[in-house]
Length: 154
Image (cartoon, rainbow, N blue to C red; front, side):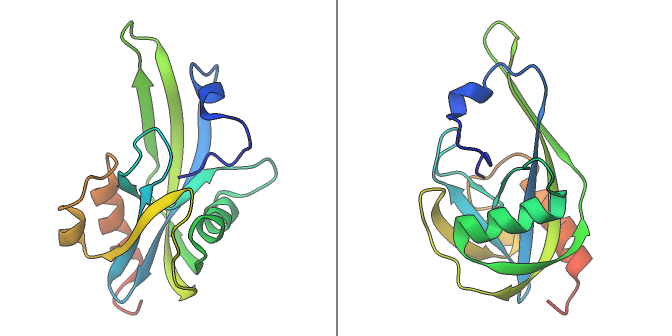
């Protein structure tokens, strides 16, 4: 998931407010697109494409923009899903980072995913296959919600 800005990641450490991000679970033939993060933190861990919401952008617009920028895929949003909160603390208990991530369910429309600086590896996976990968916290629940929202016609 990209940060949606040109600022270095260290500038988002010890925030004075949470950062708002959006992600997208793209469904194609009953499988969901996962990307292995290309940047720290959690480099190599699988998650959904997504990133920080820009000023004036809706959550859904941010999710679709990040999807296209990161992996070259175009999709159609079907539903917003339950938000996730990622709060990390340092050894003293101070908030090191705080993100509120709004995932979306979407149907694949076009484009074959390609790797790049933000995605080391890309996979279309079933929920069972996702359990065999290192993933971000809460991802399995988001995958289940996305598949239920998109239905069998994806």
